[in-house]
Amino acid sequence: MLPLILAVSDRWKCFAAAAATVILLTVATTLAFGVAVWPAFARASEFTRSVVLEQGNTGWYKIQSVFSWARMWGAPVPPAYALQGIAIVAVGAALARLWRSAAAFPLKAAALCIGAILATRYSLDYNMMVLAPALAFFAVDGFARGFRPWEKTILSAVWLVPRRPQRCAVSLIPLGVSAMALFVLILRRSGISALATAFIPHRGKIDAEIKNAMTSPR
Image 1 (cartoon, rainbow, N blue to C red):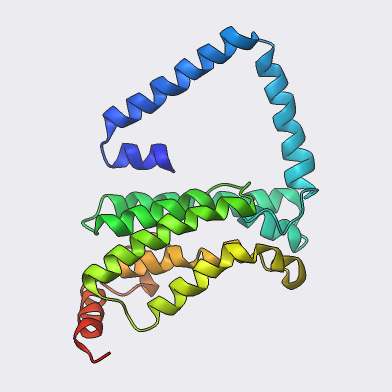
Image 2 (image 1 turned 90 degrees about the vertical axis):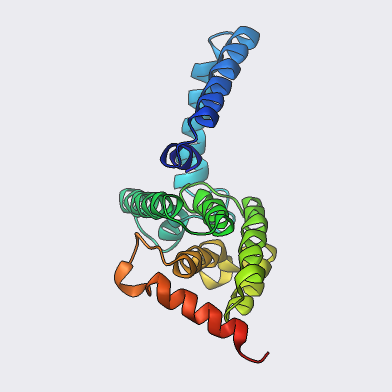
């Protein structure tokens, strides 16, 4: 998602710097370990894909992704990949639209943090720490424009999720994926949705609700 956002937001200098860094590191790795390192890398990746990810030997409760959710519920590998692909396209489209909009930067940054986790098929429980900056960015916008009454409750619930992702081993629900409902909440607050425009209120209605929340007695 990061290269996509760099491109759609016209941050080409940063994009070029990142690409140059990858090229330099690739060359440095080859010089240090020889060309044989790349076939070895491919073999290790194949092992991770087949054994760790597709067979779930790491434990489904540790892999917090749409792919893992589908596999844990008994879906064969191809449909699980298809669902993950749909998630990638949907999240990418939503992020691209959000970042090209006039939405506040903290909301854009929060959505990018969460979208980066949602888009990968292999996100372990410790990667959930990325929720921390997402919550912080959301809070920045909340303190600037006001919170709706129920938003603080959702933020508190999401903050607790990384502490108990293993609970999905009992509930059969990967809590990490469930917590990504915050992504939709951010789109809703921004008035932007490439996922379900028909179900997301217009930006004007969002701003009106926020204004009411700010002016109503606490």
